[in-house]
Image (cartoon, rainbow, N blue to C red):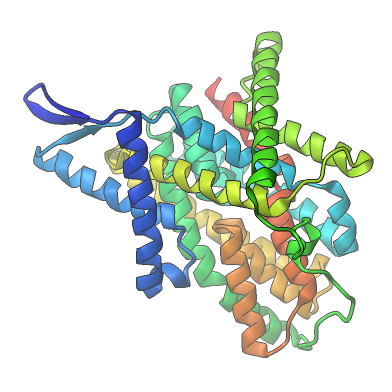
Length: 411
């Protein structure tokens, strides 16, 4: 870590260790602030977003006042990112779809449709506003269904293809989505119940918890040997995914990011392993690695955010996000609710869709929890289907779809 003067401006250059240490400190600060500030907890704002974005605002102030600029070395950001998407893939057991039956299939296919719709709608709106359509994709499924994780992952991919400001747009859109998704779930549910005179009664079918469904049974423990085995599995899948992505680009010219390749290989391995039981996958250890990797990768992405790239895009971006929000609300109320049978479970699931369709799965869970608490009726069906689709299965189509849209419009 050292200071130097570049064009008359003081620049703090931080090496890999210093950058990673700062990210860790900001992540811890984010967790502390989330526990102290009710707003952050209420809207399920992730700790990396809180700590990283706070620093990004500070960096903006320092830049505009000419105090100091920061130069980071984010060499570890990409490995953390790939590790996170690998853990997502290892949770993608297709056999889990049997738990939710017909309703899960309807919801999952609807989510896949939304991922295509949000990208198409965003790109069309961006073109109408006279900005790069890839920025519309960033304000589409990348940041809305994808959340901050996908926003921080795909933003640099788009920028590498020449789309200036893509990361800032994606992160800003994801933040907007978190707040909007947290605000709208309850009102949408209340409207559906009152408008359609829905009987507040949940399905009497038995549904296991989401944790049991994805393999996180209570008897699983976290211990060093098991953690090392799962870490080696993640690293091997990451290496194979990077190899496959590189070979595909050479053979076809299609730019499949390494983290998407790793996720696909992880899904393939998980489903083969489900059939032949080659290796016991401890999901508690996998989830631990997921928490660490997403925390560090997302904090690095947030703290290095160039907020000033949003200056010229503010009005078009807000317009796109407002229209995306209206469109998702319309689809939830007039399409999904009817597809799911217009009952109480459908109401709770629609509240969940508003959460993760605009923000993230924790928003969806918070929305559904608030609805069930208000009416004092728990929808176990919703609590299996929404997290399972929103946190795991949606990415099977959602991420490749994003890759195609970015390559198509950037090309």
